Length: 454
Ligand SMILES: Cc1cc2nc3c(=O)[nH]c(=O)nc-3n(C[C@H](O)[C@H](O)[C@H](O)COP(=O)(O)OP(=O)(O)OC[C@H]3O[C@@H](n4cnc5c(N)ncnc54)[C@H](O)[C@@H]3O)c2cc1C
Image 1 (cartoon, rainbow, N blue to C red):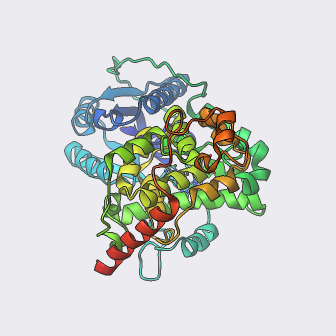
Image 2: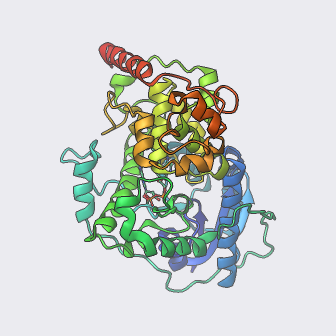
């Protein structure tokens, strides 16, 4: 039996991990993780902590099986070829990734090691290329993609028959410890607990998932990002014949779709998927961008979302749409700046998902919200946070206002503001822009870009 290396990346689990299963089945296995400073250092401290704790959890799982997860630091192009030579590795197994920079790195690693490399798609339900138009391209509209996606048979798991670890002598791993500031249980154990908790409440998912003050969603996005659980494992527990099960499965299809799209069109990471919008004249006002990031726009629902993001690394999906739309359409700030900020802070921040969703919000993406659909943040707030519970949690300086007042404090009379302890311009800002004026400005700007064309 030869030596097979399993290179863990965004797949920090042993169950339903085709790279792991096949490496084990092919030879004496060496599990390895390469910490790449160029990737890790751009993440927020909170995201780094979470990542390190997932990594340690994986290392423990492998130790329980009698092996060692090698954890080395440095660019994979330098570190992996060295390890491969040292240990006489014969094949390299890893799960693929749609990110263009990861793919470029992988090509270099394969060529520098000169190894037989076997790549799998362990982090999606259906592999890219499985769902194509008659012309052989990825669907640019979600619904036809979904209709085919839902009909496809789910590929079965590959499992290790037997696990024999290669003898590597002294473990060259770096040592580190983590102080996880949140109470989250890391690794696959935690991910499965989160899935179990969600399954207790899934019946309400469809009707309650849009309300940010209600804890109705799964919070599995960051586990899916780090791969502590596979989407197929989640799918096994869902009943698509029930409305809520179907609604949830549809979200997993969006996730697959955005990954398929990025793989097919890597240029969308920094150019509009719909080229008609390549000439949008963004204002990119620095002060407005700073106010948005700090949750000081004067629109309570937007500020609540931005503060939730800053304090927890999470933001509810409905509020991501509202806050994202506000940045792009009300402030006319380039979606790429919003995308970067979200990706830095979100614990689930993921290139394919974040770019896909930001382009959707900006109206520049495939099958995106039409450019003339401009969310009214006050109406959205009144509809999805009617009693202001979410706003009160994240913007406590407004908590003294009545439910009907809290969505637009600048419309409230002076006496009521005083009674609620709100002093506009002092402890809470006036709105950065007027909705109607911003709306007209946005429509004119997008129309001008469309008139210039591609
Ligand atoms: C501007 C913006 C940026 C976003 N950036 C990201 C990102 O970087 N990473 C990320 O995983 N999601 C992103 N999303 C999608 C969505 O907001 C999150 O996946 C969701 O809020 C995560 O919470 P949850 O796991 O409780 O979701 P649930 O409602 O429980 O959904 C289950 C799973 O389905 C997937 N999913 C749900 N909604 C979407 C969606 N709109 N697009 C793709 N997949 C989805 C996620 O993997 C999620 O974990 C973004 C949305 C917007 C509007």
